[in-house]
Length: 367
Image (tube, rainbow, N blue to C red; front, top):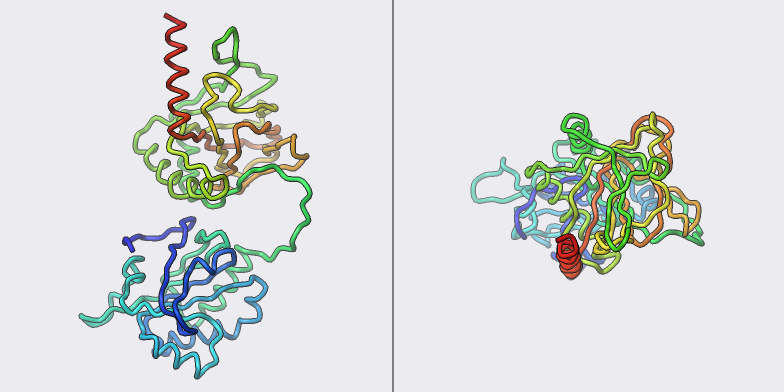
C-alpha cells in the first residue's frame, strides 16, 4: 500500500487481512454499510481493552446504523482470537502483523521501542459509500466510545427508507471540498474579479455568446491561477472521478475551466431552464458539476430537473451535484443572501477530439 495521509472526504482504502473470525477479511464485503475502523496499539494494553469493551457495550445501539466495527492492530492472530473468546467480542479484529496497512496510512506509534511496530490510536468513521466522515487521532481511549456514538448521531442520523416513484438521474457527492477551501474560493471571486455570465446559442451555423437577463443573472470568475487549478484538479480526480466512473461507467479525462459563480439575491440571481450541450461549441460536454460553496448563507437557489418532477436539489457546503449535460435543468431564484458555487464540465478523449474538430471548422469558416 502506498503511504498516504487520509482526510475527511477521501475514500477508505480496500484491504484484505487475516481476521480473528476465520480466514481473511475482505474490506470490499463491508461496503454499503457504515463502518468504524479502530486502530489500536496492542490487544493486551488496558487502554485498548477498555475501548474495545466500551464499543461492545454499544452493540445494540450500533445496530441502528447497521454499523460494521473493525479493530486493527499488529497483534498476532492468536492474541486477537484469545481476546474474542475471553470476552465474546462480537466485532471484527484484524491482524496487520506486517504493519503494511498501518505504515501505509502513517499510523505508526512513535513511542514504542526501536525494532517494534505498533499502531497509534486512530478511529475512522466511514460512510456506506466508503468515504471518510470523521477522523480521530488524539483522544482519550477511556471516553472515546461515547464520542463515536455522538459522531454517528450527528453525521449519519438514521433515516427511514422512502418509496421513490420518480427521480432525476443525478449524482450527489458529499464532502468534495473542505469548508476552508470553499471560503477561499469565495474570496477569490470577491477579490480577483468577476463579470456577468452569458450563455451559448447557435446562430447561422455558429456558436455565439449571448446575454439575456430574463434568462440568466449570474456573475462568474474563471479560475486562472495555476496553483489553484492544480488543487481543484486533485479533488476532481480523487473525489469526483471515481463516483462518475462507478455510477455512469464513464471515465472523464478532461474538464473545462473552473468558474466560481455567484447568484446575488439583490439582482434576483437565477438561470432558467436549459441544457448544457446544445450548441456546436458545447456538444463535447458529458457531465456538469455544481458544487455549493456556502449553502447555509442563502435562501432559494435550488437545482431543479423539471423533466423528472418538481424536486429540489441543494447539496451542503463542499458537496456537489453531477448530472448529464443532456438533462434539462434550472437554478431557481436566490431570494436572500448570495449563492456561490464552483462549476465545471467533464468529458473524455473522444469528446476532446470532437471539440478540436469543431474549433478547426469554426476557424476555417471565420477565415
